[in-house]
Length: 358
Image (tube, rainbow, N blue to C red):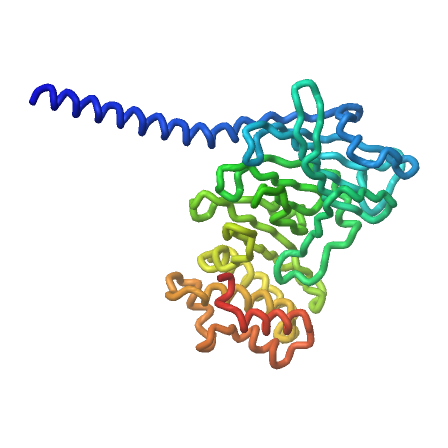
């Protein structure tokens, strides 16, 4: 009996050791992704990466390597290099459309300790269209406007010199993704189904607004993406621009719009929107009642809040004028009296879909 107990205890100890060993191994496989090394370059550094771009550039323009990171960003054991490169205009010459650079590229490559390079993929992040430089081997990224924003920012708004990236596991699969910020835009490159691909890209407007950012709102291990925008109210002279936020979440395959997650419980945003609305109403009187821009975006926020099953805040008392099918009175007014085809088409589209943001 005593020998049987000793044998049982030994078996339990071995089992516990094996379990602990497997847990440690599992944790280690994920924590190695956090071992990221960043390196910034001077204007003369990083020239070896330029060989993946055309050797001849438009007159007066030159390449620069801005930032490199090394880390494991796919399903192979080794580390990859992520390199951000720009095509620059001369610093003594002014171009009103883009500022210092006119094209941006992201290289993903294998790199040995001896410096040998093997390209995995090259992305063309941005092209101002002001200089002819074709890179047939580069995958272009088509920047999108934020949801329910119907005008792209003018090219002269994209003259910011900022261009950078960071590596972070946005999708929650244990593999690092590439979050890239360039000009007034962001993009996400992710390793999915055996290849690197763009899973998100969008314009945004910085300045007084918060920057685009990623945040895990529900603590589920994957990050949502917040894209701020500023909507001009052209119908009312002197009216403040409307703040707008598009929220995207990872569904396991792509980043999809889920504005309800941002607006449904956001009393602060609704109150700010109503304050801007009421301030303009007091200044301009009945003209605001005919303003489709205010009605459209306020109606969207009301509909997102209505998408919840129950009302839980004082602010919701302000939106009890909704009809039974969840369509706000503002959106209903636009369908009946509006002239902006973009708003009308958007309302018809979402009215045929599941509840807003779902």
